[in-house]
Structure formats: C-alpha cells, structure tokens
Image 1 (cartoon, rainbow, N blue to C red):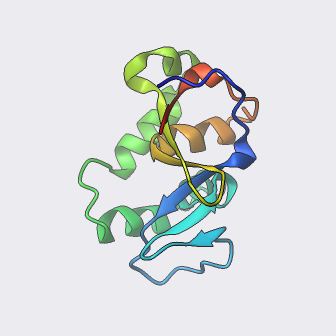
Image 2 (image 1 turned 90 degrees about the vertical axis):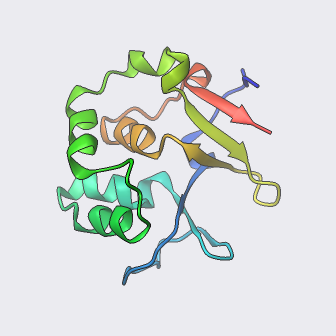
Length: 132
C-alpha cells in the first residue's frame, strides 16, 4: 500500500541484529534480539561518513547476509541516483512500528543511508512502500 503523506527522516528507524562487540549507546530502542537505530546512528550511515566499513563488514558477516557485500555497497554509493527510487523495484520498504509510532525499514537500509550521506533529508513519499 502506498502512502502519500510525508515521511520524515526522524520517524524512520533501522533494525540491526548485532552479534559482535559494538557500542550500542546510540540505539533508539531494544527489541528481543534487535536494536533499533535512527538512520544517522545506523552502522550503514556511520560507515559511509567515516569511511571505516569494519563494523558494516562485521554486521553482514555475523548475521550471514550473503546478499550484501562491501563491494556492492560501494558500487551502490558511487552510482546512486535518487531518480532510481521512483522505480517500483527500488523503493524503500517501511513498516509502521505498532508501539513506537515510527517506521522501521524492512528493505532499503543501504539506499536510505546513502540518501542521508548525500545530504538528502527531504524525503519524497513516492520513494517508499509502507506496509501495514
């Protein structure tokens, strides 16, 4: 279901399953096994701004995310074009958290982090699919 109302960056959280030694002081909320972070506090975004991808690599390795790699993240970063988010297959998927009244990214953490990294903070609702 598409949502035509505005979506604010501060209302979006990223879910990380952290299975390595990581300082979770910036976590917004803890769930049973996951931590929720604001996009600016996510491992993906912090890796982009620092240029140090060691925590990102640990995250994808310890959680066995075989569909992700540092190489593909860097290629996405270098070739990112905001227009590609208008394509249905590239939209960022969000789900409304029932208690926090914030959105949680279910697909698109890399794309959202790159948006913020590129200084894009005004989010177009057409870039998202909001799942109920």
